[in-house]
Length: 333
Image (cartoon, rainbow, N blue to C red; front, side, top):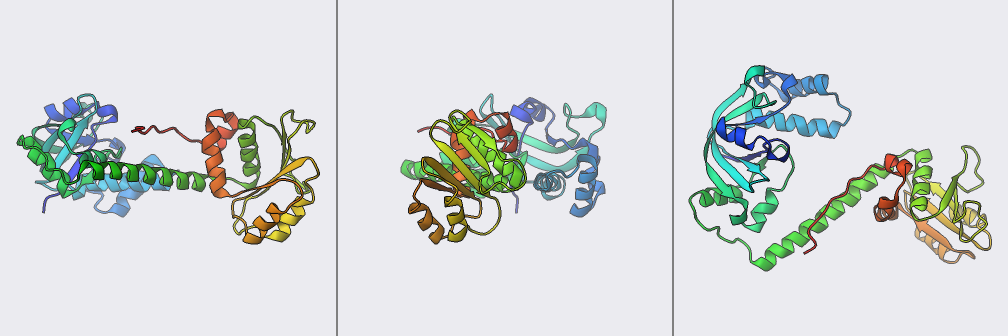
């Protein structure tokens, strides 16, 4: 049974016209040479690591999977599409069952790995249903397409109006759900990155959050800190309120009431305390914080991620180096 595939035409669709004129789709990874010589995913992965390194194993796995699909999984008769963001058009065709590794003087610009495609026509993005547009939004260089997407593309080539699989209200609900899913996934990825920080980096990271909030900070030197890892105040000296004392526990396991009571004793009258625990807090510890004589704020891993996102525009260089993030925009309506 034939399948469908999206093959991106380079960054920003810059190779769209070349794909069309040369009746092909192409990907990079030229250093690997002819992909047919490897014979197995294990050998392909080994070669990839030799040429491109393995600093980020997850990225290596994604790249190897795409290369393998491009050479060995796509079959003659599969539907191939590619996209021009500038024209807002999809080029639709059929794979001809021919993978090739091109010589340097014959490459598709700077791409050497190609598959021959018989192009059959173009489809405007504007005629597609919203659910199909959403499914085609991935930035991966290559990914598979579901049967409904293939059928809709084929129907559009014939000038047929798409059959709305969903009512407008359902489409809107799906967009809201997709937005919430992306936000939740982003939140979890940020938490994963925070957990990779060392205990010492965590102290500087939380100090960066406080600086982004308008405070001046002082991180305690390594060694006994008498229950205080970071101090913060508007003037940096603790002479003006609020004078904040911060204890940070960056480890597995929740903080109990005994540890929290010890911290409460170092927060004196007129001061505020913040206890940060990436392992969370027991119910008893939260009870102790609520009944403390001076204000105590508990910050868990979810709170850290939220604070980082809310204050990231004001992060200084040190804070951004500890937690590199990029901004993503989403339609408001």
